[in-house]
Image 1 (cartoon, rainbow, N blue to C red):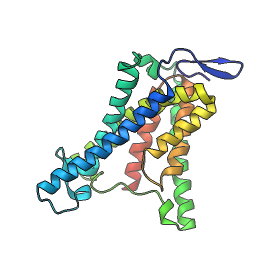
Image 2: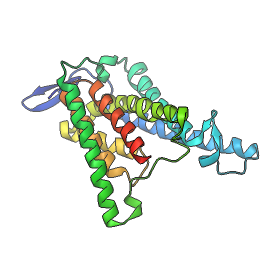
Image 3: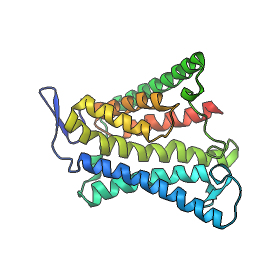
Image 4: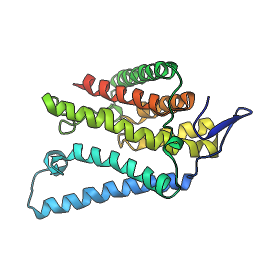
Length: 248
């Protein structure tokens, strides 16, 4: 198995050319959280000044979009911005070091198909288990109606945000950016588990914590196995699109 910037030396992986550090990843993560919180606070204050009395988080508008959808777009954009600053500007990294390398042959995409199937299985099994247990807190929440509008062109736009833009940004941040440095410090599987935990935590959902963590492990393994970020992007995108349509 191979990961960009890491070579196999006696079954131990060591970093050779990724210039950023764990500190950069932690600072980037904190910056994303901070900017999201600041955006919510500022938007809330502006809406209060405009005398909007409705529940703006579910019914209001931000940047011309329903608030949940606008926040989803901003969160993904902040992921990209954080990677650009902490890896690109601060460390002069290249896109190849973030995993933008062409996979060899068709096998990587067959593995991506397998990763997506694994993700769906985890989603279904977890849903069944939580139904049997009957604890609502652990049930996977359905997307808010304001986040996914299941009608015409609105559905297409939601799919673009959730199914394409989201996976593109998240794979860059969690697999291309976070995984290599944690693997360097804690070993390959330590890096996979930590990056998957970070991936899960950033979805801000207790009910989805476990299935997203497991899917994060699958995506990290796929990235390591293929040496390219493209297959994990494909598997992630298909998973998001299918899961969103299944909810409907």
